[in-house]
Image (cartoon, rainbow, N blue to C red; front, top):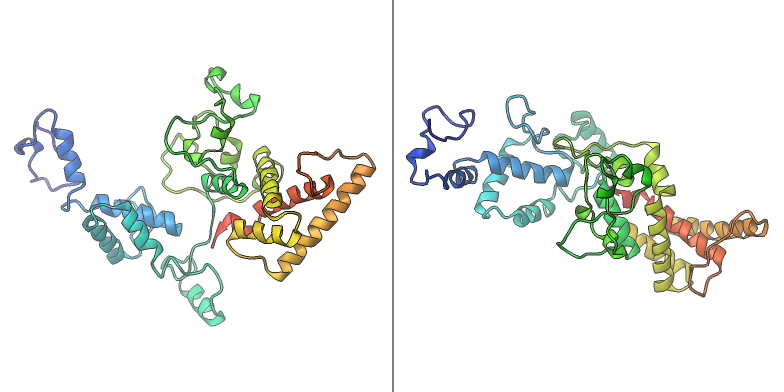
Length: 342
């Protein structure tokens, strides 16, 4: 019996690979690879463009990215799926070209809300689950995107490409879960800990808390589609977590360094970094009131010796105002405009 593509993919009359001139001992995998990427096998391209569509729109044209068979969901737009697959192959399998095609489409540029009342009511009644993409599917940033976004906002992101994976600092109780705790050798260079999340070492039996609460895969099963849960641990991680508070201090330093002690400019810069837009007059007013009241509260707590404020900020701002700015920076990380793609 000679090598052949599995029969579930091809008619029974399809010849074995050994009938091909490439059927040498070292050429069989090449023959399989060429078949997978050949125009005569559109399944590979269909699966790939569906995944790209899923990443951009939070739902694939086929809602079961790992199952294109009879047990999977049917495509909502079969003609679009076929056209994208054909275009993908004609573009020489260029991922960049298909990404550009999708994000420049009218469908991608739709908002997740703000439809006129009558249109919204009509569309909701016909397609409440938005299977036909009449609006954008609002989605929360994934764990890696959220971590990288916070580092970028703070001006702390190490954009170095390539190289070894990074072991970040974790609590000792997590290390003790490993068979050999010494395997988790923390990378000594501090700047390496701020690299993009794709470079973080992932172990099946040690899950980083920040990644875990924001639904990062557990690394033990294939994850075709990530869940988007909402629970209290996420709010606690963003408000009390070591990583969030560390980056809030760095962001506060950046705001002060770039804008001096000008409160309005610092608020505007923070909103620009987090949401890509200027704050509304109401948001500007709320933020100014928060900074003033928080500084007054901290000064009272210091006077009553209830807290001891850090002195890490540069001159030009007292400790209470500086700590209030850190609290404001932490609040900016919790803005829906930062956490969600609309």
